[in-house]
Amino acid sequence: MKIHARGHENVRATHAKTLEITGERDITARATCVVGVGAAFDAEGLALLRGPVAVRLSAGPHVATGTAVVNPHHEVTDRLVLRRSEHASPDTFAFRSTLVASDLDPDFAAALADPANEVTLTLTETGPRRPLVLVHRRDLPEPTGRPGLLWREADASVDLDAARVPAEARTALADGGVIAASVSGPLEGVSQAAGAWLADAAGRGARFEVPGDATGTVPALLAAGLPVAPAVHLGRTDRRSLAAPPHAELLRTASVPVVFRAPAADLGVLAEVLAGSFGDRRIAVPDADADLGHGVSWLPLPEAVAAVGGEEERVFVLAPPERGAWNVDLRPLLPLLVEQGVTARTLSTVLRPFGISRRDLYDALGDAPGAREKGAREKGARDKGTREKGARDKGRGEKKE
Image (cartoon, rainbow, N blue to C red; front, side, top):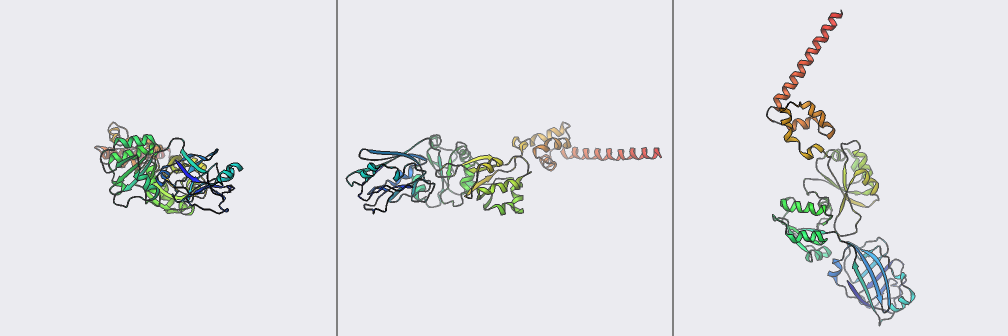
């Protein structure tokens, strides 16, 4: 991607934090970050750039190079700004730039101050991309801004209401492309094939964006490889509400994923709330990639607490307590085991370490043939044994007297 501009007599190129090319044809000497004027910007071309980029600035025989990362939320205007810092305002095209105005040597700055010289800024993506899935409801207005441009220029399209996913969508997923996925209504109603494809896309590291979703909860669930329902949505929260009894009990016992927005530093409170709960709780935390859309990494909660910090609010997805035996679904086998002589009491003892209580066991046995009768016989036998033992103990006591 090349951006062409011209030099200007007021170019100073002394700014130590930014580098800018502007569409304006005139600047003052106070614009110390500007290195070129009169530029024409290709909005679509700039919108399609993602992730790390190589930066090359040239004017006459002078060349300077660096690297930067495209700001996921930039807006294409009549100026293009590269910043050395992490500042990501909409007018910042890229941050973490290793090339700013003050890095240019005096001869280069002098060439930029000559209106006769053409100034060229070249931006080139580097490294592999992660696929981006844009999910949009057809009954809503078409996405606008940068997501809208990416939507219209997508490498493949998927109709999530259809029974089959087209081959080009699988190819775009493998190539790290942009995929426009549309659905007629709520995402809860997608086809089984589409749901499986969305989960597979998440497993392949895809990022997800749902234009118009201000909370980020739906794309976070999709990026975690989960359906959007059933799930518990806590919304925006903090350490005080996470530790409050209603939320704390819900976090400990919810049998479905819990999604919430909170400062990363508050995960320590979540670990305290869940201390002693069954199993190792996992949590999906936002990844560190600066790219459009939501991407997550699944971590055990203790690792997440150690790895993620700061007061920046992020969206997290807490997995429900794992019940290992039910992951294999032993329930159809339980009545057979009972019929073969394995007592419900024995099964309860064996399965207790997996987090399956006696109540869970009897609920799973339900009305299986012979299960209730066998349970009643076991209880009767235990009661009879208790009575006989009591009688023997009483007899021994009377004999001693």
